[in-house]
Image (cartoon, rainbow, N blue to C red):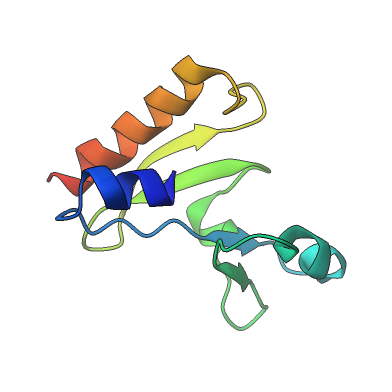
Length: 98
């Protein structure tokens, strides 16, 4: 999705990245293997999940001021289903257009 947004909306400042929950570091090598998605590791000194009230597989969309502007959970919304992919992309672009 990052490459598609970059190619079709080059003026939009969109950066997609993953943030792994603290104490779940064991899978970092596997999740990053063969991917280009930036992957950040939450730490006790820099918490993200708790302040953002994240649920497993949430996509948290931040506005240009890094405020939470939307959430889309991938568990019930498999991105292999085109309507789900299109919905998430539209949510991201709506916030990017603000």
